[in-house]
Image 1 (cartoon, rainbow, N blue to C red):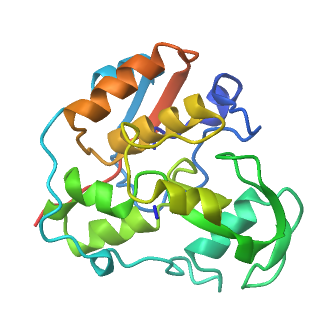
Image 2 (cartoon, one colour):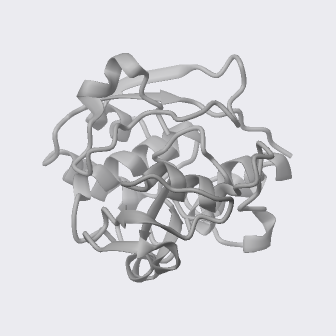
Length: 224
């Protein structure tokens, strides 16, 4: 499936229930002049633009993904597995480690049990504005290692339960506030819209969550 990146100085205010800082791990896919937005969670949600979404023309193959952007032999899937493993991992094809799915609390030491989920699924991104992007922008979105809230390692069962649904249609069993923060961050980072039902749920549920200060590096988006 399938940020506002938090600088080191903001780590303390952006810790998640899973113990992982909501912060950028790299800078790929972001222009040198990319602006950083710093807002409270509820303000981020409030400022998401609302528009009707359409699926017309979507094809998953339009988002080239699991590339090895830095040429280090690990593709995007393996990079995320290495980042999120609770123990050290080795090799190009990361097979053994220890992972905990924040969606449902499932743990594994076998990477084949987990999927790498796009917090905002590719189809949902398409509906929300990516249909107008260049191929390069879609590829950068699909492999966004620059903000660790964009891609997460989760149990295959939870990922497939989610599918391409938005928060009006699906929420994880656990860490709902964390998930909603990540969702709002990715939509803001990539300048994507929300539909009205999605916005209503985000606003309502955000009111029950800690109003954390979020820092988001806005990605470079190019249009056709």
